[in-house]
Image (cartoon, rainbow, N blue to C red):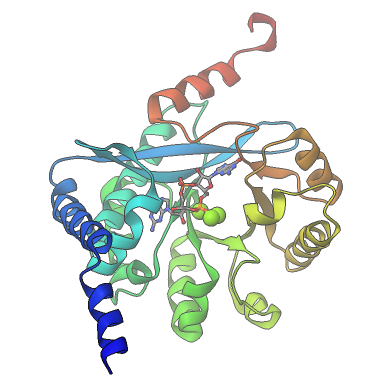
Length: 284
Ligand code: C2E
Ligand code: MG
Ligand code: MG
Ligand code: MG
């Protein structure tokens, strides 16, 4: 089969693919050193209520890469997960968030503000994940109620009984849980109702075309009704326009996160945002 062989060989020696593979290997070797070299940055995106008051933040990871500049998760999270490096990186994220919570406690403007942290499946499935959190909470002396873990539908569905056990153990400690990117996975209603979730996040793909696209209006409305009906808080992500915010608010979802309010900010800029909001209106 000369034809088939030729095609296989062409694919195998494809120079573009080889280049991509080389770049991936280079990035992986740099990723191995990133923690040690202090290249991780945690950005914080405000979450607001109907009055635009900040009610919390989501911590979003960035890689200050020496050659490529500030990298977004899409550039490296897959590689970190495949290689297992997500475990030390994820721990760094949790440590940094807990240290920030503790520091905020000292300032009345920021005391009580929760931080949401994204947790990957591999991290959550570690047999000692709960023990790691216990140790972190003890070391940082932060309030567990202010630490919120964001899980995805695929993580939850992968092993539902294990997921529920781990969530319950962490809820006993006081942690909160949010279902991220809700509506993009395959979680059924019966699964959702079984999980000890505090919050549902409407995925930004359903927010983007609001208002106007009837299909997405229906989906957003259904998610809000369902979440509130199950006694969860509902927050929309990816809110970029007043029209989106108005539509969501009218449907009962007053809590929002998105570029309309703020981009994810480095800690100094977030601190400025907090201090500005804390000033009395007369002096603003
Ligand atoms: P996510 O958890 O769903 O985070 C929301 C993403 O939407 C963030 O992208 C945020 O910057 C972006 N975003 C916020 N507001 C808007 C908006 O108004 N419009 C649009 N178009 N986008 C908006 P980012 O920071 O690039 O993060 C991407 C994903 O990477 C996150 O999605 C999360 O799944 C993952 N990720 C981020 N940090 C971590 C981490 O520390 N650990 C793990 N395991 N995953 C992380
Ligand atoms: Mg998230
Ligand atoms: Mg999300
Ligand atoms: Mg997302």
